[in-house]
Every structure is written in C-alpha cells, then in structure tokens.
Length: 585
Image 1 (spheres, rainbow, N blue to C red):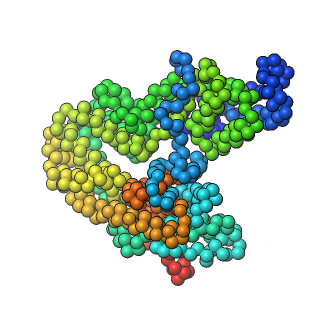
Image 2: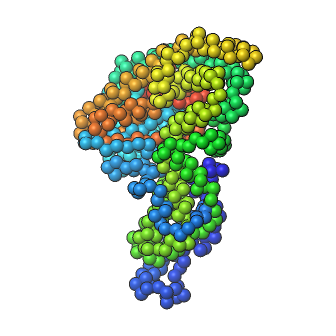
Image 3: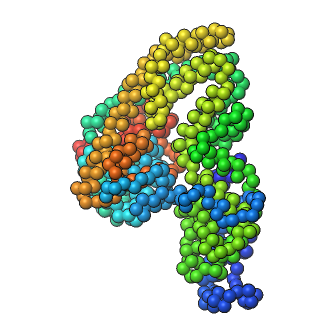
C-alpha cells in the first residue's frame, strides 16, 4: 500500500488527473474590489507574466493527485516533522546533489581546507557508470572540480590516446564499448567523452595493496559457486528442520525474511507481516531511528485522501500567486518546472510551497491535507535505506527473542543466520556491519558443532538428513574470504592519503573520489580523522545489463557468468589507461 503510493509519488507523470484550468487565475476586474491597489497595479503591469505562470504551472501539475485528511486545526509548522529545516540534499560548502542523479548519503564539515566528494560505484552496473558520468558533469561544471581520484590505479591517468582522437563519434563509441565491456571506469569515460571538461584523473591506490586484494578476490571467486551451492543445500536442510521445530510465527518470520533478502518478497508486503507480529509481541522500534520514521510514515499514509490534498495544493498556488512579486513568480515557475523534471524532490517542493504560505501569511485553515502530505513525504524521504535495513535485522532479532520456546529453536536459527551471512561473504556481497558481526562470531562457525546440532535436533523431530552440503568446506573458507575484505579495508588509508596529497600538489580544494560502496565506512572514518569536509553520494541508476565484471577481474570467461547474479562487488577493475599502451593493443 504505502510503497505503491510512494512509487506513484516519485513519478511526476503519474501524479493523477486534475482540472488544470483552475491552477492559477488571470486576475480581471472581478477581483479588483477585493485586491489591494498595489496588487492591481502589479497584476496589470505583469498580466502576461501571470498568464504564463498559469500555463506553465498547469502543464507542470497535469495528471497529479495526492493528499489526505487531518484532524484538528492545521498550522503550517505541522508540515515540518523535524526541529531543524530538513532537506534531502545534504550540502557542504554550497555543493548540492541533483535529485535525479544521486542521493546524498552522509556529510561532514571538517577544519581542513580540502573537501572530498565521495561517489559510490556499483562496479558491475553499466547504468551506474553513466549516472556517475552525469554526476561529474554537474560537479565539474557547477563547483569547478579539476581533480578526479579513482580506485583501481596508481598515479596520473593519461586518457589522451582516445581523448585527442579527432572523430568524436568514433571516440565516444569506443569509450562506450570499453565501458560496457567492463574495461573502462566511469571517470575515464567522462574524461574522454566530455570535450569541455578540463579535469585530471589520478589513480589513488597503493598498487601492491591493490594487487594483493585482487589476488584474494580471485581466490574466492574461483570457488564462489561451490560455496554458495553448498550453503544453499545447508539452508534448505535447516528450513526443513525449522518447519518441524519452530513455532508457526517464528517459521513464518524466517521464511518471509529470507524471501525479502533475496528480493522475492516486496518490502511493503514484508513490513505488514513484521509489523503485525511485532505489535502482538509488544516489540516496538527504537526511538529516533529510521524504522520509527517508517512506522510514522505508514501511520500517516493510512489517512491519505489524495484528491483533497491535490485540490488544496492548487488552491494554495492560486491564493499565493497574486501576493508575489515578479522575482517570486519566476522562482515559483522555476521550482515547478524542476519538480516536474525530477530535479528536486517532492519534499523540497512542498516545503517550498509551505514556506511561501508562511511568508505571505496565508491562513492554514483549509490546507490540512496538504500539510499532512508534506509532513509524510518529508519523513519518508529522510529515511536512510541502508540504516533502515540494518535496524530491520535488529528488530527481527528482538521479535525472535520473544518467540523462542526452547534451545532447539535458538540453536537451529543461529546456525541458519551464520550460514546466510557466509553466503553473502562468499558472494562478495557482505556489508561492513555484517563483516564485523562475522568476525565477532568466528569461534561459533565450527563444523563439528554444527553437525552435532543438526543431527541431534533432526533426530529428535524425525527430520531426514538430506545432505548435499559440506560443513567443513563451508566454514573452512572463512579466513580466505575474510582476507578479501580485510585487504579491501587496508587500501582505504592509501586512497585517502593519496587523494589529499594530489589535491595539495594541484592546489585544489575540492575533488571527486570514486570507489566501491564497501569502502565508504572506512573512508568516512579516515576523512573525519583527517578533519576533511566530505559529501558521500549514491548515484541513482536503473537495473540494466551487467558488465562482464568477474571475467575481467579473474581473466576467465564463461564459467564465471553465474557470479554476475548478485551485482554487488567491492573491487574495481584496474583502470584501462593504467595498463599502458602495450596492453591496449
């Protein structure tokens, strides 16, 4: 319900149908006796402008429906759910992320002169590479960025071999092909295809550390399919045991959680079930977290009357337009067009309308639905999805603690959880938090102990041992797989130090740093330690054709195609122009 509504909210063209003729009025003689003299003069002088505003706004809000009802006497401040003015665009030194290109994930203001804009890369996604290139378009043009630091190489990256090729169509086509094949990064692609961009690319790796990480990646990737297949067989065995051992509530929670993790159960449907179970067990989200925000958004959404809020928004625009001067009207048109083009978020636009109402002292009576919608969408857009999923896992664990009836349930469920995390580990999909948890539980990943629990509990509940998995193999690869993540973390310090060194050598104060998302937490801690200002951006991109990422990193083809399924890998392919001219032939 809520997610479906939100999907329609974010699609500017599916906002619902309205009578656009009433969006704004041409103020004629019928309004003269109720209009102050100054406004009559203004409306006459700028009649053409007002008519243009009417037409543009009518086009912008064509087919848009939102809203809900609200009890009590409304005031404009109810639209702002936070003590401080909220914006989904985190800004550092005036830097703002275009809403249609990326999402600001975190930021910090330090004492040092340098600011690093860290762009998270989804290495396997071709669409993500184009999104990063578009982000660089904005950042370079708007904030005079001249230094782009890249994962996967060391030292100056010279792209002149392609950049200076006289036929732009051929040049762009070659760059597109190389990027599609996983041989070229978004940074290199940008430098080659943008003639007007005067940027310098630098690889900021410690090359020995990168090669060590690459080798640990290959060691895991080669046997990844064997690990995952064996773990899947183990999880199936644990599922069969759980169906006999668990209570119906615990079994249902675990099945739904597994389906949700694998993308086979939508978040909306999953949350409805979890919320009902939590309420019955007296478990509530932690105060002040993203899950609590989600709960509040769900509560508000239940009262939505979309047609009413849409009407109120049009009425507010009608009411405030004659109170505005020429500059204000131009800004209103600009914001409206930007909203239609998905350049600004729904919360930004609706908070802007609320601020106009407050500025011009419009009575909030009659706008209860619009106020409530603004509060709702502002809460929703403030939710950090990464933190939300982490909170969800902890929330599920708290529910399970109320559901366990005996030690058998607890032991079987614990093995299933560790096995699921090992699956992520071998798939190279592990998050920082999951990695820390696995390290803390390393002593519990004991094959003989797991075997004893499985046989004992299965025998007690008459569950046949299905086999098809090797517990020694599953747990035995832990250290090698963790080494890949440890090697990745070891590279973080070198990448920050080399970026700062290059910025100071070039005399630049702002630089873009592009790395895989796994590095984000480590890089953020290092940027804080170095007292740098930073902005972390997650590019927006579509699910699309994946690049042949694994075959490039492992120097193999075909047999590694299955490794593409997850799409979340933590190691960048070596930069194309780092390899030298001899390797490009």
